[in-house]
Image (cartoon, rainbow, N blue to C red; front, side, top):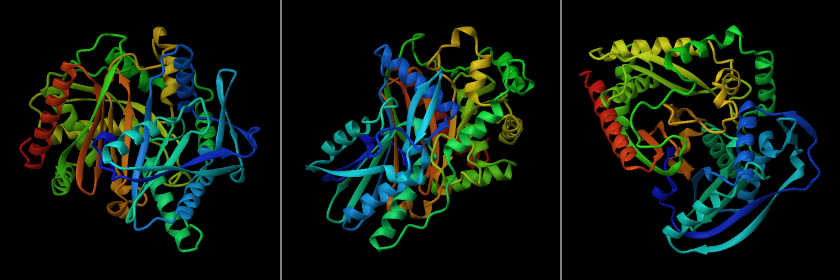
Length: 461
């Protein structure tokens, strides 16, 4: 899977179809379930921006290919199988007493209606259509996913966009695997065989149980308190100049660059292992070094998403299984790569002891008073994310399916860097504010990161 803007994605023209999800029950669900902390916060943000008329359009969308002439009936059945398989996708979400309730629809309570949208005759028109189609989801309105396909004689591009309320980054390759596997089964006249999935709503209940008695003086929050005392803020600032004004949001720039090919990435991983760490730790060290070289501090402080699916009940489930945790470590001038990697490894080990405390609860209990009712991160936040899509279920078929993740924000107040690895190498997808300074800073940072990675591979750092 490659994370890339739809504007930089080539989708051949063809005949366009949409599948529209309907609720045949129309009177709520079969049961009321508790939702996750991420969902509650996200829904409240959507409510606030809608009420004040300051909506921030965004989407998380996926395109992938199916080779050969398409069987539309089998594809529709595969899409419906996917929606019925994951409980989080067939929930109606309703606010209540400062919380958010999920009303679960039975699998048989949802259906898909096929709509013929006609032919699109150019790749540019297809991109424009998809960009608009992907914006057709809203956290405040069901359904929270839209699905379609661009059909050609020899191949089909399946596409869908779903609200962040029901998904995270690792849900995307899971969805591709589920849909493509079910489609192949239905074309053979068979029933899909996929691993069992746990309920994200069950996970949300467990998450709430772990944080139920959390208070501001709880010792479980010591990790956050210590981090705040050293950083001076709950939200660690991105330390390089982006040319932004406080409180202002700017149009966003989206781009993807390849940092290393597959051979180079293998060599980088070998260098990290030889120095006593894992690849993602080496990447975090390299980012910290690059920031320092561009004028940043000799201590890295940032936030990291932590996948909490585990390898058991929820390993194949879609939903928002992400916690966000602080990380800090020294990046002293003159230190070699093994020394910095050792600092990263120590910081990661320490961080993992505290992941039961949820980010949203820490925000509620510890953030300064002026952040209490804040709906967005208050400034450009230092954020590190890495995904290895070669390890995602179904990755052995990615060369055929060509899955692509398209994350888009209309406006932003900072910069987000998503490092990700696939079979072709190591890539960096970025979204950042459209200012002259931000473009200059981002270009310099990527250049410094590329030099650092090359030096690590050559054992020159």
